[in-house]
Image (cartoon, protein in one colour):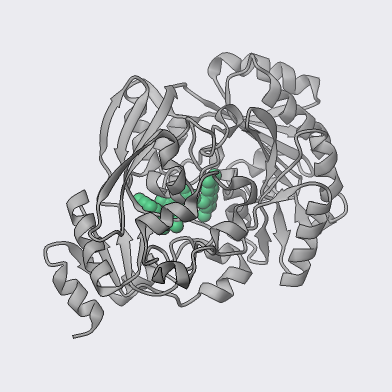
Amino acid sequence: MSDIAALAAALDGIETSADRALLRLKSRDFYWYSPILKKQLDGKSAELIARPKDEAEVLRILGACRAARVPVTVRGGGTGNYGQCVPLQGGVLLDMTAMAAPLSIADGVVEVECGAKMIDLDLWCRDRGWELKLWPSTKRTATIGGFVAGGGAGVGGIAHGTLRERGNLLGARIATMQDPPRILDLEGDEAAPVNRTYGTTGVMTRIRLPLTPAQDWRDVAIAFPDFVPASRFALALAFADGIPKKMCAVFDSQLPPFFKGIAEAVPAGHALVLAMVAPSALRALRDLAREHGGMVVAEQDTVAAERDGDATPFYEYCWNHTTLQVLKRDRGVTYLQCRFPFEDTLKAVEAVRIPFGDEVWMHTECVRFGGRTTMTALPVVRWTTPERLYEIIAAFEAQGIAIANPHVLTIEEGSNYRRVPGDQLGFKRMADPLGLLNPGKMRDFTIEDAAA
Ligand SMILES: Cc1cc2nc3c(=O)[nH]c(=O)nc-3n(C[C@H](O)[C@H](O)[C@H](O)COP(=O)(O)OP(=O)(O)OC[C@H]3O[C@@H](n4cnc5c(N)ncnc54)[C@H](O)[C@@H]3O)c2cc1C
């Protein structure tokens, strides 16, 4: 009997599958956005899928894998962008989607099993008068465990920063790969080592998050004759303390034609701002738009749109959905992730938007970092060669723009300004001494570490 067959037998009673088609499907995420990662990761696959329904089953799976020295790669919704849940060394794919129950809500804190889809979690909180502070544009497909372990920025960032900010992740329960595997309950700063570490430092089973009172958000689309006034407006909105808001994104004129559903409303050659504001702020938003030469061209109820499978909430044109909207019609592009300086933000945006012409289509998002507001960007980049991509990255960095490179596999190489502070390596040595959790994704953890 092969190791994997023996492992499957040892997991008797737990949902497992070795179906080849399912293995191929579940061993992928959205790494193919990057032609560089596509080349490296195509064909990588787990050998067995295990889908636990509770913590006891998670511990049994980890125990059996540890005993057999089989790697374990955790998977939520599989929407990660950097091959985060692609198993580099085969082994078991731990599918967390059966552990999806909201557990409690009190005093603005929700505790939830980490395989919950974020849309389900948010609607559950909303029915109780609360909503999530942050969500990715993949809210309708991603899990909360995947967002904490692999994402961390998105809608809500204009008001609350990112998951990196102390207080935006309150705690996590994790299962370790120790001998024997055990459950740890991490509170406050203790949870930092599992925040955006790609499932290399433990398997999250439960997460505790702070909430904010629910709002009936409105999606608003505002067209501008040019990118510069659109950006000035966006920053003015970001700094407008009287306007409650959840999102504000700016798109250069090449991008709106790819946004099926609102493209027709945007006059040709115009830049576009997509914002989410509270209903009480609609008049103030219109006044601000008029002051900057903008014209409201579309408006909808965000929550009604996200509840409707046929509708598109505007956040699904934003964040990394922008790249997807273009890729649906043009496979010749890729993207970058960057953060502009806090001072002279627009000067830096223009310094990289203008010179690249049709090679870089600018898309920015207003967001707070450490209490300061700036713009991040996920520009769409015309793909030619790796060398050219790295020239573009260097040109951005020369302007003082930080790049979180989405074309690399490891936490250390890719995270930059998105890295969560804390001793992630030290924590991994304790929680996963054999290096079996998502091997290859934490660069600084070496074979010697595993042998020590
Ligand atoms: C179209 C598109 C738009 C996106 N927009 C955003 C955005 O706005 N903001 C953003 O931050 N990201 C964004 N992303 C990236 C991705 O969607 C997010 O990271 C998302 O939150 C991942 O959730 P998931 O459940 O799909 O995670 P997966 O892809 O399944 O996993 C992501 C990582 O987390 C690990 N993991 C998953 N569950 C657990 C667990 N329970 N315990 C430990 N580790 C775990 C996995 O091993 C993997 O390393 C986008 C991606 C796409 C394709």
